[in-house]
Length: 136
Length: 121
Image 1 (cartoon, each protein chain N blue to C red):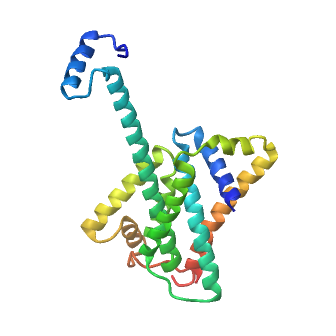
Image 2: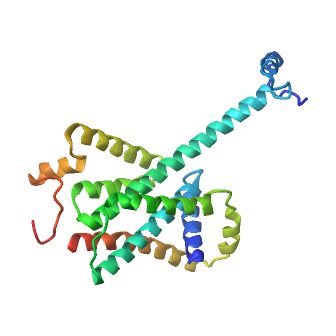
Image 3: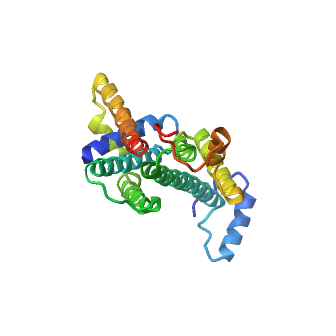
């Protein structure tokens, strides 16, 4: 049996007893369990970061294609910029995540995105209308 | 082409290495974005010559997921970064700077080109 690395031998004995009663055997120490939990949380953190970044890439691609297909407006530009901002570690995720969640809520409540509202309030025109350099 | 993408991955990885503990996630992400916009630029060039209708925006989701999947498989899953490091660590400083700028300029061009075509068409 591997020697317990935690300082409280009583906790290891108790944990060993509990683990044995679950049929895991006494070879599993509290130290190994805590190490496993730390490793699992690290894997979950990396997985969440990786998944979030990949969602941002999908958003960026859809925004880019949409601009190519339909032209430029405030909403599509904001989506593209916020997709790019997601590549800035820590600060970028916060800004980008807050924008996308806020945008979804705004669309759900008002039927228009944040960018549509901004464009509408500045130009007084339909917020979904595309910007054309020769036709404004 | 694989060599070019390997080099872009290597440089982006190195750039993120100082700022984050999972640089492979970002490097593979930047590479996927670049590959997608290269494809979009090719589509834009072809449609400048021969115009044909294109599907709506959700059509791109399976394409970008495929690119992300390929890059994840190649660069994130059990990838040994040391192989790339040993390949380019001896790179001359001036060449490194020049190639770094080239990557940034290429990224800007491939993203801006389809956008400008979309605005001006």
